[in-house]
Image (cartoon, rainbow, N blue to C red; front, side, top):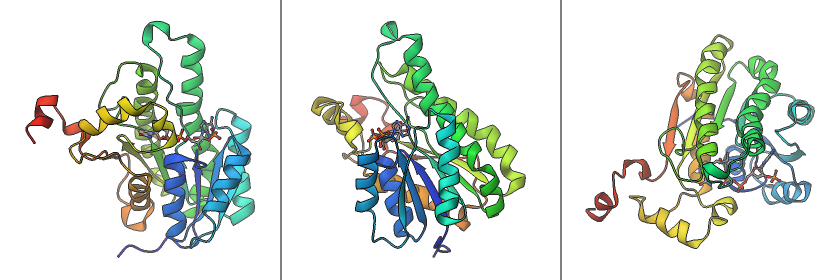
Length: 259
Ligand code: NAP
């Protein structure tokens, strides 16, 4: 039995939908007070309403992680609402498909501003509170795409998700003396609105390449985050947890057919 995280404060960026909302639901269900954030206020208010009534309180704070001032304001709002920050889940991300030959400099800048710079600025804004916590937790949502696998059309995205791990490793060392751990979850294909936009053919081909023959659920990522947030994960830092139903094990279509 893990030590309860009741009363701790978590910030989850990109938590108005999808994986972030799943992380928020699991952490709040385990007793943490959770600040969910994202850009669209209407979606954010709806998410906070949907998650109300769990063990911990849930509040929505509007923030665009591409804006440095928003990251600072998000951290301040969490302290104002709940008095501390113990857990930061830097989850907000975008994943547009663009073939390399059509990729513009502006598109590269935009995806790095959200997926990498946004995560770094979110974490930096929370550092004083994470240190004061004495058991600060930084949990990054990376991906299997980039750190482990590739997919045509997502070279810029894969670059950002691998870059998050570069950030994680040095930050984990820098923050270890402050009692803060920094880890990353590498989701495979998780059923979210964002993934649905890829279309039915994409989803069907993905399921065909996953040994467990299903897409992941957002709660699958939430439970990995809950482990990393627990006191019992205090000695885990600079580590990655792949949550993908075995997808990265697949060497070829033939390997799947042989199952
Ligand atoms: P999603 O359903 O599209 O949700 C994305 C969330 O991020 C929304 O709450 C969105 O709200 C928010 N967001 C987007 N841009 C933002 C910005 N600039 N500032 C603040 N919030 C922003 O996506 P998802 O599938 O849950 O993906 C979440 C994370 O998991 C991403 O980092 C993604 O790369 C990663 N991931 C997903 C999968 C998958 O299979 N789904 C696999 C591997 C990794 P607003 O639009 O209102 O801002």
